[in-house]
Image 1 (spheres, rainbow, N blue to C red):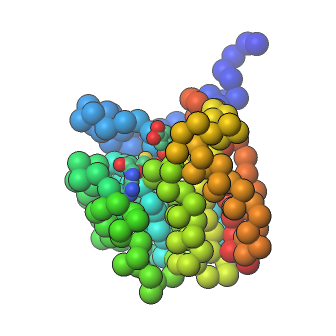
Image 2: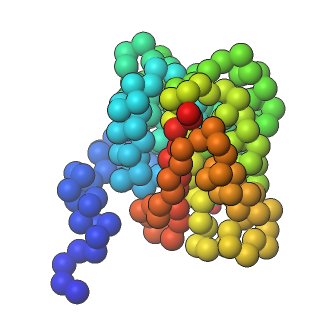
Length: 212
Ligand code: SAH
Ligand code: DHB
Ligand code: MG
């Protein structure tokens, strides 16, 4: 085949990585933070879904260095807020700085700690948009919490649902957690869900759901 592949073609059309986001990515890599942020087209999809759903309150589980959080936060209306949860103190510190650099710090609440401990503190809150992207073994628990913290119309997105096929014959707690999440997210009667391959270097999938 001549010319670029499909993902390169799409990334080109989408304008490539913005200079500031590329800088944050390179700085994070230099600090030894893994480059497992959402790929460009998935990041753009998060922005589209946040804007299209009219979300004012967003929740993210798994901040890393703040890449997807910046995209979500900037797609919210001016009075919108993103609550993002990160277990690693190092990642949280870098993300805080990046939220400042991106000019979205005023609309982001970063809660530091394992999501399993932090989510119960949010029990009285309701979110319009939820992005699940943290430790894979806990995904079933994160889906339960997402349902509890949602209302009809809440959009729930989850990343890494295929893991290069490891979820089909799970031989580790991460893949087993995802396999259970996948069955639940597609069969729970409170959810209308679709699942698709996602862009990125490694073959993977994602889901988009709306709470009925
Ligand atoms: N959403 C980010 C990528 C998240 S990578 C982006 O696209 O930019 C997964 C993150 O989840 C890592 O930063 C990891 O430290 C964090 N994490 C792992 N276990 C966690 C837990 N139990 N609670 C909260 N965060 C966790
Ligand atoms: C990993 C985590 C992610 O959220 C991701 O998108 C890719 C890889 C990981 O833990 O390896
Ligand atoms: Mg991910």
